[in-house]
Length: 248
Image (cartoon, rainbow, N blue to C red; front, side, top):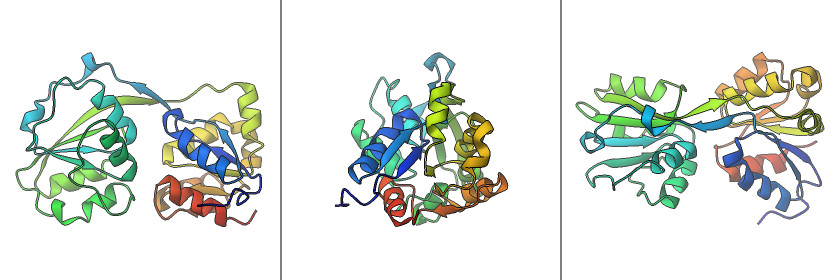
């Protein structure tokens, strides 16, 4: 249990989409910090009528890459998924969401480090002839699909939501610039943060930023951010643990 004074009133900018920000914000508050919610990505569901026709029962594996992928997929599901389909989570967050929405989790990596965590598992060594459906948002990384195809799988995407740039108020932007530390969990998040707070970017780049992968760190550095720390995993617990370790 983290001591309530651990963060000593630290103002933390939480840039996750609104749907994922509350839990981390509450954890920061319990630990003595002041979370500033500033979503830099807006999640917009794709109308089910726009989904491609896919025979779910023919799939060998269905992979969920995020909490939003799970929630938006399940909201349109009209019948239970066949028992023979392996239901796979890319990490702890999507696994938690799967269980919360009544889906079983057949495969989950030990570490929540994105697609790389799945690809090192023995279950994905020989994919010859396997039919795989990846549930995700519009766009995103191709590493998972490309690697599975190289290993012999047939891969399709079902993109169940779009990512849009939010429109925060002037007051929200001003409050965001008062933060003493920033949390960003995707390359797109760093990019959008820089767009939304472009006028105050010079004050932001000198503030500590927590990210969840080396890939995000490299991108943030390319935009001029100076003090970037990579967490041990993408989980809220790992983010909070690293936040407490910061010396500000």
